[in-house]
Length: 389
Image 1: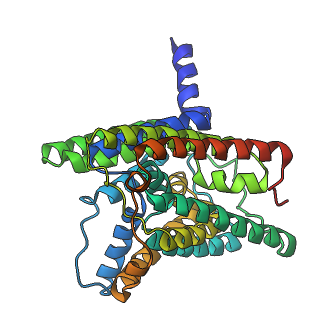
Image 2: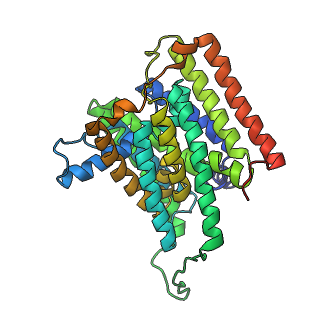
Image 3: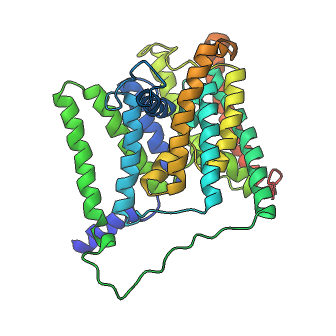
């Protein structure tokens, strides 16, 4: 029995999950969130954190919504905790320092992602992943912008490799002769179990306080963080790898996830279980395209998008901690500027594709689009036509 338990524990918490499986699970959880209240997004949570900082600093007069009552803020917190638990259960959590240049790139990347998400009214999740699944024209525009921005960001990284000396991370050698009061690696799984139980307890606290719907966002975020960390699922790789190595694995995973998410949301909207226009707020075409381009450069510099920044912080990545803070503060300031300056009205309009092309044309067209994306990525994997190395 002990051997069997160890085997299953290793399969779930120690071995890396396939990217395609993670993509399917993320799509299913995203559909649950959609049915629970609204489409899954992440940037709004960063925005709430930034709003609170500037409010406490005296820059804003209006009090933001409390983070423990803000659905997306709770979901983001859940992703952090889910990744933290996953890292503990795998005995992989540790504070991971980075060279000074990487912190500078993390800061710049966070700033660019904060600006880009404000322009596109969403990040790689709300502005691309969920937007496409909700059949918002802005989601496809942001996808194009993300691809172009990833290419520019990768060109910079290649220039950096050629012209700037590499910087190794030096850490103080451990004194192996020094006795420890406890074995940190050994106790990590037990701590992870305690934290996981704590998340469930908190969800029940929300339920007892008649805030079940709000507490659900924390639990769903927790599941997403767990899945993403166990699979190393990263949207950045879907846009970076075809240019950098030609690998199409993450493109396939994201495409599978999107097809499931899009198919489920189409049934839900087509059956009028929710208002068909729900989740359609992305400015087509200028805001989404420009925002995606800026965001794409930022995520390459940072080495993580809005979602992977969260789960990598959960496993102890200090560079992404800088990115997370920069993203939150910049997103809040940029959103405020776009609002008071009147620029928001000039970025474009939200467009629901079935209103323009009908359901009969939209559904097969979207399916063809993503199948073509996968086929082109597979062709590039064989020919390396778009690889910049």
